[in-house]
Length: 183
Image (tube, rainbow, N blue to C red; front, side):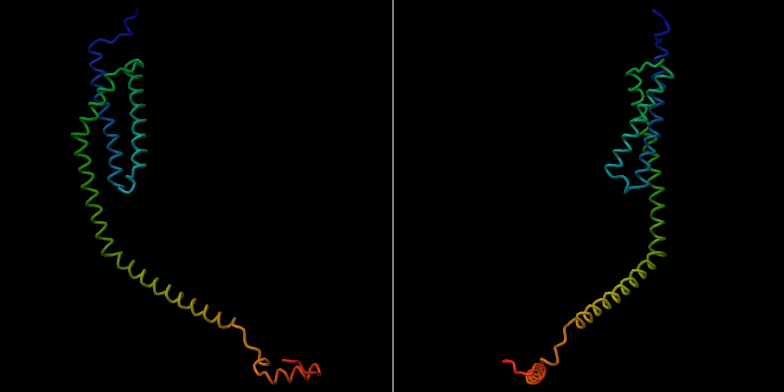
């Protein structure tokens, strides 16, 4: 048996405390995803949130693997997961809530300012442009309807002038064929 395969109690304690720090660092990474949800709320749909969570857990697993390879001679221990979970939760309930609160207030203020600028400077031009476009569309629609009416009236067959007057038609036919038809 080799003694270098075992860890002392102080080494286990140091690895546990480092895993708590790792968990807090992973909390910072998770806050980046939460900040994206605050900044881009339409993107915070179920599919996007699920994708972000999957990416986070892949990062989490990779970090635990690297931590075990660097500090525990490649041995993954239960207390590493437990310590990182403690560090993660401690970060989220302390600094994490503070950071997200600041991000929400900053971007809330930024959004309100942008909304005011838009509603006072840009929206009147957008409404004017919409009104002009609607008027133009009405002119084109009216012209199209008038063109359809004109087209239908042109396509109506004209009555034959010869058949309009029966007597002339009969006489015309008599003169052409030299005999009377029995009409």
